Structures are given as C-alpha cells and as structure tokens.
Length: 240
Image (cartoon, rainbow, N blue to C red; front, side, top):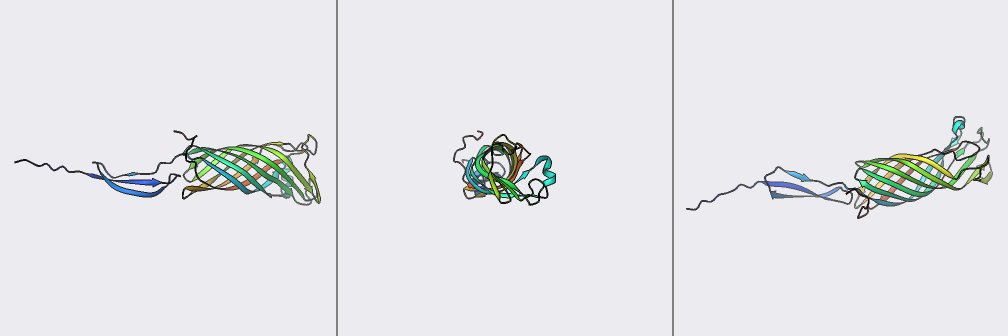
C-alpha cells in the first residue's frame, strides 16, 4: 500500500504599502505567502525629491545702524515689502537637500519722527535682486536650513519727512553700495497633499555688509514663504 506524506506549510502574512510620490503610505495590501517565517511588513521607502517653485510673498524688513543702533532702537520700525521669484530644491538624499533661489525683493526700514539721525520720519527703500544658496536638513516632516546669500541693489529711495530722493550708488558720504552679502537661517514644515506637497518656510536674513558709505546700515528681515508643487518624476541629483 502506497504511503501518503502530508507536509505542513506555514503561511506568512505580509503587508505591502502603496506609496505616493512623497514616500507616504496611502494604502496597504495584505496577503499570504508560503514561507516558514514570522509576520513581516513592507513599508514605504523615503526617496530624495526635487522641486521647482514660483514664489510671491510678503516680507517684513528693518535696518540695523551699527554703532548707532542702540541709540535708534526706540525709533526703528519695520517695513513690509514683496518678494517674487523662483526656488529650486535639489534632493541629494532623503535627509539632505540643497536650495537655490533667485528673486526680486523690496526691503528697507523706517525711523519715527524726532529720531537722532534725521529728526523727521524717515523711510528707506531698496529694490534688490538676491540669490541665496542653502543647505537643508530634513527631520521627518520638519526641516532646518541655512546658508549664504548675495544681493545686488538695483535702485532705492529715501524719504525724509515729505522730501523723497532717489538713492545714489556712488562712493560719497550719502552714497549706497550695490552689492550686499548676508546669511539666511530658518526652518519649516512640509505637508503631503495627494501627489504634491505644501511647505511653509520661515527664514531670517542677517545682513553682513554695510550698504552705505557715510554711515553704518545693515539689512535685516523675516521672510515667510508657502510652496505648493509636485516632485519631479526623475531626480537627476539624487544619490543612487
């Protein structure tokens, strides 16, 4: 009589995740396979992403007057300006990326009336092109970034009381400098939205260059940006 051998087969329950373009799990599929192993789960693998964004934001800026800044502290006021341009985020690894931006920004600062510098209410405005390059570290949905920035002042106005004059970019006691250098530092948070991402970025700009010839003036500012875009299908700069 022929014997029949019955072999016991252990099934392994495996969870596979379907991920969106940001590496976030949007659905899980559970099925069984015949392996003699314990239950396992296959999750989503984060990948480096590259984004290109157009930006139009409102910025808040003020001026620092160097050695005279403490004397003018009670008279200083911020001014609101506009920032418009483009931002390029190049993902190198899931945790690290480089951000390069190029934009027009209108910035400056105000002094209240009776200030020791001019005596009248004073408003200084600069029309500037700026190019920052930042290193960004991603920590989950949060990130921090910092880096240098160079700028070129196209034009400007200085209003003292009711008298308004165009700025002179010449080497004189009343002249201003064209080039400016600064450091930007800040952070933000990213939210996945369908196949796209929403990012809110807050950054502080600390001017390093004295932009005037006859006195000390440094740019300062806070920039808040909102980005909404879809990652590139291929990431040419991502680490393989």
